[in-house]
Image 1 (tube, one colour):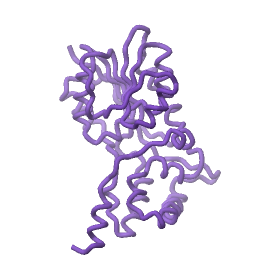
Image 2: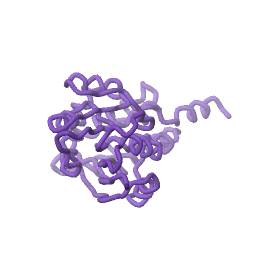
Image 3: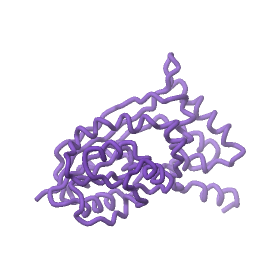
Image 4: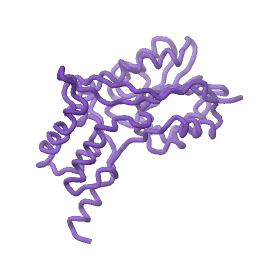
Length: 262
């Protein structure tokens, strides 16, 4: 195998996503805003203890904390620091390696589960964390999420001799698949919905790519990255940018409410 191919293969393994709270607030504040309806599905009540799985910078965690006791966990130390700066009980912990044992009335998660590539480990950890008959309520990217964005990223990487498909950092399941995983771990699914939610971005798609597409961008040499971003943006312009100049991310969300069976 040539040295060039060695480098290309090495670069085509997904890297861990790194988070900047400042960049997240600038380019992704809509994530927490669009997660507000999920709180209605959760229906928290005073006296409950809730785990916010993938709490990020704590914007939704803070709203929950006004109602009940909340513990936030996130794999990103930077995001956890942001949540702690709000005075929240937050700690660094992988969602694939939860260490809680029957401590929570409910587990809540918004826009985080699609970053966890071992869903069975996540669901088992949630099951252990819940008290008997506890609730698991979440929303995340479902089958078809950001399909146009992903296709443009991977096509441009392929054009540069890099395996774009091998760099995806996301898990976007169909409802039947995820329902089966939940039921296999003892959950009864009360509600599950896959729905389109085209989402306006605060600028062009470049900010979104820089915030969420790090595993793709890291495969491109530093000196080529601006050119790569420009090529992806221009490929996406006729697909997700309207005549009014507003860029709409092609989001598809999977929302569910489940409970541990007695």
